[in-house]
Image 1: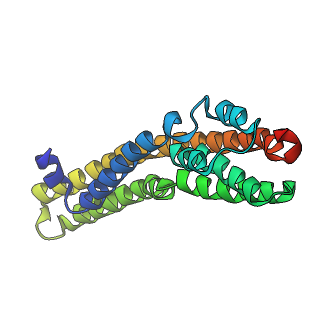
Image 2 (image 1 turned 135 degrees about the vertical axis):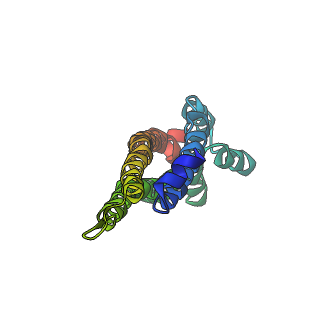
Length: 207
């Protein structure tokens, strides 16, 4: 591996840094975007059951807030209902929407950086290719002819950087699209959960 890095020349180092960053983001997002941490399957039904007999106690709401991202959104609505004794539907919707925006921002963490790496890696590989081509043309001399050693080095720089740029970009792009789809699904799930819980937070729903 070290011999390949040496053969690829200095343009490969930015690609290596990109690959390390992309791998770290992919591992972190796979761990953070698990359904158990974002939207546990039974959480909404449990919250609806609790709110049928009245609003939960503050300590229960705090535990709900800390349980998951969906729990944070639901807890925001419950706190808004506890603050407003009249049960204003517009205020409850606003509380859910504000909490949902914060939750969506939290879910999208690092995804813009991963998308940037997926877009930049082929360009960095192209930069290495251009550097290799410059070395190839530099190996040509009208007086001494071509330098085989320098010519071979230029070709290796061009090919290794092109290949490594694609090796970094393709997994980054695939995982970025996967995470984007996953986040969109979670956001939709939280919106639907807020709509289901909303009637139970109004005074008539808690009777």
